[in-house]
Amino acid sequence: MLACVCMLQVGVDSFTPQTALASHRNFGAPKLQQSTSLFALASEILELLDSAQVIDPRNNKQCTALDGLFLSGKSNNKNNNNPLASILSRTTDPNQKALIVVMPQLGDFDSAEYAEQLVAIQNDLDNAKMSLRIIGIGDTNSARRFANFAGLPLDTIRVDPQGKLHLALNLHGGPDWDIPSFLPDGILQWFANYVGANNEDTQEGRRLVARSWLNYMAMCAGIAAPDTLPEILRGYFGDKSAPERLRPDETVRVGDDLIAVTGVTDVKLGPIEYQSLWKNEKGYQRPAELATVRLRAMVEVLSNFKEYVPDQKYLHLRGATYILDNKGQVEYEHRDTGVLAYSATMPRPLTFLEPYLGEKALNPLELGDNARAEGSKISRVEYG
Image (cartoon, rainbow, N blue to C red; front, side, top):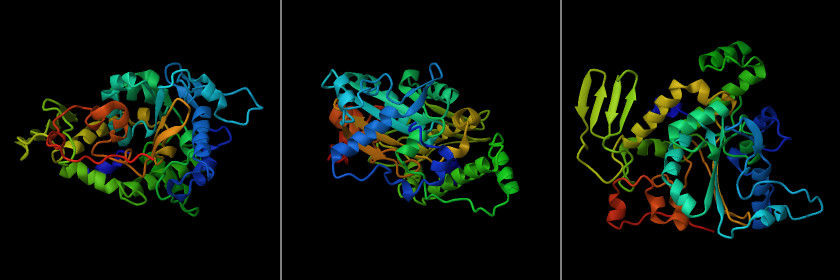
């Protein structure tokens, strides 16, 4: 989650989270049964999404993950052998689609960054007849705080307190290291208190907290997370293939103005004030610009950590993105490969939406973008 900056800067009712966490293997490889049919694979994903039990933060009541979308609701026809039949029968608009974003903890870098991009395309999604559903790990308070910070409508968010959907989909969780069984509980108790998880009153709970942090920090170091370190470095060194990320008048503050950064020009570090060397450069992601965006998220989450992360046993679980068409087919799928890897094209995270939204998907924030203005080739996702 936010420790990376400090280094360099459900579902299915049969799942018991503790048991599933202990057997979360193979670096996040699909748990879905191998199938020779893409239709069968899509139906398994859809069934998991359509049956996952989550919380609606508007009323704190349990519902299915796709509740309220054009795909929601399950069949009562036990004699129907087609798992998609009831879902297909509920679809009335042939152009309707659903964008399902399974996020990690709502207090994660990935969640904050992804949400900023999604907020910028809300009207475009509506125009494209694409419903948005975000499912993140947390509780009702996490969802409300996250929606307020990100500017997302609360009705687009559902929360999965124990990451059951993530486990059912077998999403990435780092190198899957375990805490040695011989480690004394006293050390686990000290660590739980140190990270603020002092509500864990069992040895197993404390072990799972330590395990979650171990795998999370391993990903931050690039272990079982091949895209994480390059993305962290990209945030510091800049990227001329990516658009700007901060408006000139945006200010990020830490503490009582102990640190203050305005756009990419004015920097205040305690008593020291200066202007960056690239203050006059425009049209691309400047050095430290994306790192400043991440600093803004870090300040928000660390200031309200227990609200964002009420249960630290699931910090390591990553997310995924799906686009479902009106027939319940999976048109697009991305499974996160580590921390800060919520897209296959991180310089332009919403490139996968270009076929649906047009060029707005390539620069949702509509900030300076020399690469597009000069007609440079922008890498695109290949669609199967």
